[in-house]
Image (cartoon, rainbow, N blue to C red; front, side, top):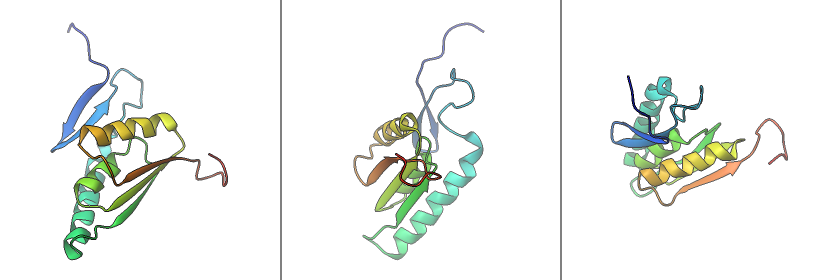
Length: 120
């Protein structure tokens, strides 16, 4: 094989887009083994949103990493998602994932270590 890999690279899962960095060791920006978890979140949020039109659920995304769960929750009709992760860099990638999918509002991003009360 020859050539180069764009960095970052944009991949799709269904109709959702994610920025990934395939050349950066183990943390590429998207956990492929969590595809079923993302599908489950999408279904749960969509179900709640359908039962209460105009009042989508509020979602707390702890250990948000690059916010893939947040993106699918917002796409499925969540009213609000709060993303919490100790890595500001991961959250910045999460904000980019929201932008890649045309999500301009409804999500917030909090850099915080949940195991250290008062830490930011």
